[in-house]
Each structure stands twice: as structure tokens, then as C-alpha cells.
Length: 83
Image 1 (cartoon, rainbow, N blue to C red):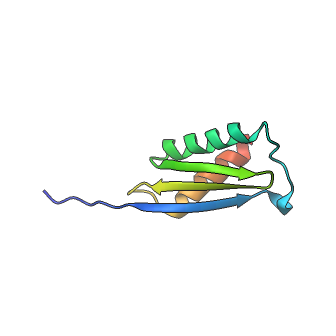
Image 2 (image 1 turned 135 degrees about the vertical axis):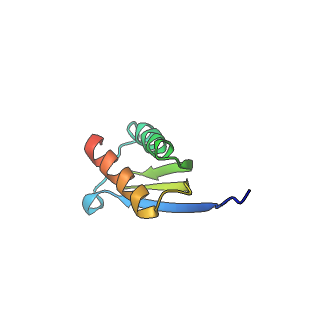
């Protein structure tokens, strides 16, 4: 039976508007966990999520059925709405 396999790892970096330091130290672990959960719910695997006060880095294995654009849209709209 034929099958399709892929392994695409994407490194995404999001910054705050105007690079203002909006993510204080107590908030960051919650934000990082939330973004990892959003990625998992989209069918992806978040290998690493981290960052500093003005930006976030994500290393994510992209789902075979999802485009990068769809993943970015899902992450950004979800975090903007609830962040």
C-alpha cells in the first residue's frame, strides 16, 4: 500500500508589536505552553517553544496535511485573541 511521509520542521519567530517588551518573566511559561497546545491541536508537534520579553521562537514539526501559512494563521489569531 502506498503511503506519503514527510518531516518538515519549521522555526517560527513572532515579535510583539513595535518589539515592545510585553511578555514578562511570569507570563512566558504560560504563553509558551499555550502556543505548544495550539500547535498540537492543529496536528503538529512543538519540539521547543521559548523566547524573551519581545519575541517568541517555536520549533514545530509540520503536519502532513497543514500548510505553513495555515499554521501561522492558527497560532497568531489564537494568541492574539487570548493573549
